[in-house]
Amino acid sequence: MSVDAKVGNIFRIAGQNIKISGLTIEKSGYHLIQIAGENGAQSPIIENNIFRDSYQQMIKVTFGEDKNNRVKNGIIRNNKFDYPAGIGPNWYIGGVDAHGIINWQITNNYFANIASPNKHIAEHAIHIWNQSENNLVANNTIVNCDRGIGFGMGERGNEGGEITGNKIYHQANNHPFADVGISLESSPNSVIDSNIIILEHSYPAAIEYRFEHTTGAKIKDNIFNKPIRKRDSAQAKLTNNKLISQQQSKTLIEKYFNH
Picture 1: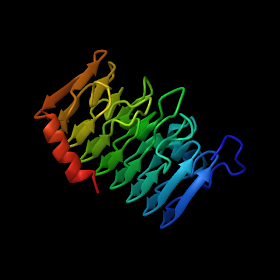
Picture 2: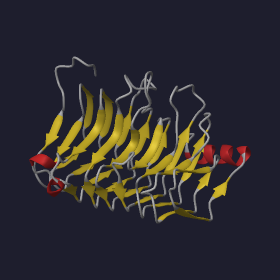
Picture 3: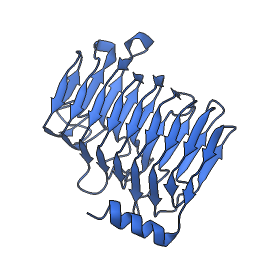
Picture 4: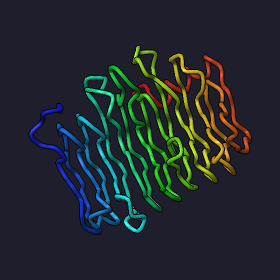
């Protein structure tokens, strides 16, 4: 886990219908797993693994520059992603960082301590962007990560998809770049619903939707201790979201995170 590590990617997937299950995968100079659509990867299943201590993103999905190489129908479920030291080795880290994915399911995973020690903010625990479409991110638990879940980044956007039933918590632990729980950036027709977000640091928003290409979004039935924030002509329909008190936050922390 260093800039001069002898091992870059531990696994590089360049085939179809490959399953990686039941492993502990740790300490790489680049990614623990790279799924390379530009070399033919399709429909991977990544389940029941422990991922630790990558120097860059733990799982990376790429497709080159040809949209025909986007990776479809992947599954990432029931895995644990963690930096056991409580913070990452540098800022260029993330949990799942996916370019050009379509119809994936990222469900029931646990992410912890994906946080930058210096210079810049870390990637999200789960980041889906750059010509991705119609993916499901559901029922994940995210603890002490700089950013929780993101669809899109700047103008490199995402289309559709749903972020639902996730639980996101960040303690007041002096991570220097602690940021938003869930964000949409240039992500039209995306849905954020039924998530719990509790942030004890100073960042002012639990959910953000940004930029003019974010249209037709729906943000509904979420529970959080910080408000929703709109930026730069983004459009979303907000329904039945609940801003909770400090005491209500403590109750949810005890219920979902202190075990």
